[in-house]
Length: 262
Length: 361
Image 1 (cartoon, rainbow over the protein chains, first blue to last red):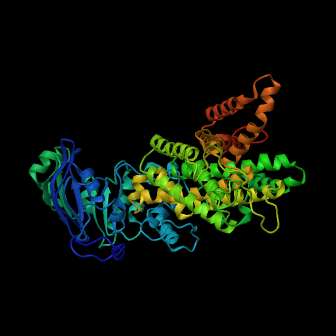
Image 2 (image 1 turned 90 degrees about the vertical axis):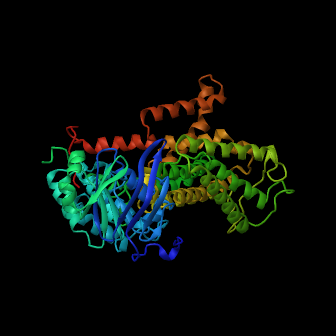
Image 3 (image 1 turned 90 degrees about the horizontal axis):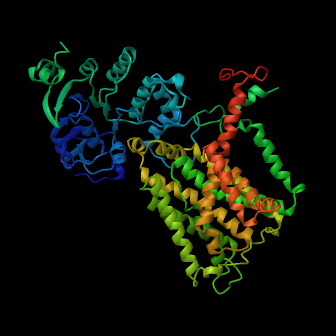
């Protein structure tokens, strides 16, 4: 097991699988939100996690990022055992996530939100010196603002943004720095058809080394951006396979897709 | 007339960076007027006004500013700020000179002041480390408990803190041949440090450290998910605020010439909170406005009460009513009242009085 150290921080090379879960369980009192989850995600792999409400998808994300510690099991990130690491240490190792319900900084502007995200994974988090316009991080914050189509809203306070813009900003925050693996928690929820197309475009255009897991109820989005699918049910992994296999699986159709998806 | 231009410039809020921060044209005209007024004030104001009104208001403003930084930017309401100032004041008396020469070491100012500030910052940082893992009312309770504990400790400890009577004859050193306790000199000394602390807070609020603190205030969980160590950042905020409170504490012991437990009891600690809230914790100017209002009330309420036939000791009644009125009418203090008044004024057509749309961007 690697020991957390300065040399490993912010490194962009790593060995092993992007993500490796072994027997991860999480109890809330007597309720098993996750039981015995074992899954492996390769570097650069794009995986969709599907499942009905209460299947444990978001709890899975919370365990991977460290918002909750798992009750049992181990979590490895690029070969390193991060099971008991605090959230910020995992983020500094290249993990990112977005939230189902936008968690943004309402009192700050768009550019400040993105600048903070860039700052969080680099040195100088405690800096007392204001950034100038030539500041490298400010430059990457500007680029990220453009990349998620928020250029016009650059100086708008986040509390005044539209819902769709907040979702875009949510994604921008996850793309800051040099992410190596991203967890997207229902990024398309509540978006208009146009915004969905933009989202799919952003996700499919991510650099190929950047793997992610996406929780998504919209099958059009999920199956278009993912190479593999994990179905969850009642805190357990129910099926794994390619999008086609999952879509055609009768058990899955029975359980999750229902008749509605034809 | 450049009125329209002026309203464009005035709201330099977070995020809007129309000019670089060192650009002086960024500063609205009102600030130049207030600044000029404060600089020439000694030409026509009496010693009493300079020393007891403005000198005291600057000091209370600085201590309240340290609370404003924690509460306004960090979302942490700390009642320990006056205690941190008190630690600096006590250390100034203990390491420097006072009438209690059995305890005071009599070291020179260039040793005493840094030591006092370092100890105050350490004290504030430890208090912060105890408080930051809690939220809301529990932060208030823990910091209040520390403040009360330090108050009782100083009152009962005679070997180091000289108990009930504390230290008197704690005077500022004569540097550059100036008697810094003379009203005009002290006025400028307090003005300088209050202004420096104000500028520092204003600057740091937009530096990564301050931005991250505001991010933590809005959403600690998300800040952790961006790679920030939330706990360490909050403790660092306490350390920074302690430095400002410590400078205020040293000036305060020089203003009064003495420090005793009564000056750092729970009552005055809550006064600091009242000052910050009445002034407004959304902007660093708020605590200074609050402090000036507090000092004026505190100084003249007695005369006003006596003149209407009430007992003079009831000045707290006036302060309390003032506090209630302001919090009731404007939860963000005098600053909030002023801002809303300006926004309403700016949005209305001066001729017709009808609201106009937002103004040119």
